[in-house]
Image 1 (cartoon, rainbow, N blue to C red):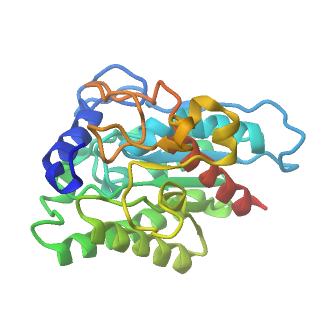
Image 2: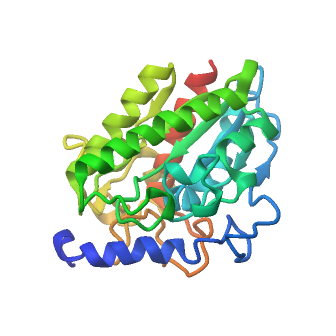
Length: 300
């Protein structure tokens, strides 16, 4: 198996491969980014569940290629545990600025799916934001600012965008301001220090605005090493009881990543058209369950 330091370029390619056509919306056909037509959201209403809160929450899920692959599993977990009314609108290859209103001409997200636009339309109780922190200048609204070129500028811009996105969601929510759940990311084998600071930035922003974080990244990290990347982890009790999720049962280990993709958690190959993960993937279920737990806490 290739070592992570050898595959930096391969992972970058995998990220863009998972993005496919950046103008493609979730589960939708490709379209021109300068002329978006209908919203690309995926909307699902929950059936009743006796274990859920008395008032089912409305949850909006936004993010990049990690959110793209997670969206169906997260919806299933939220409906099962919280009876949630769930809408997802992830776009692969994006970062925070793509969801800011006022960036439509330089953004991979059409105007109708900007965070504030969706908050005004859907009136969610919770907005879940999951962004790895695109560091390669793939999205035009970052104005060419990349982690490799200038780490100081990258973090300053990223922090400003996190603050601005929070402000736009707050204003759009008005008297029904949704709680924001920032998803903390798992270990990054290419830029390990970067993801620590991105997570710290999310924690600072959540604390400043009275919101929450979901440490989903911990669920896909070694128990004793939060920021050490690994391809395999010991199976959980749930995974042992469900052999499809314990991918190496004889060794009591399960796979989080494919051999050729050190970033994504879907165990199916990436495609040119972004879509939710089509196969059972332990890392995605672990992440979805951690997010669901934080959403429950946010509405309790």
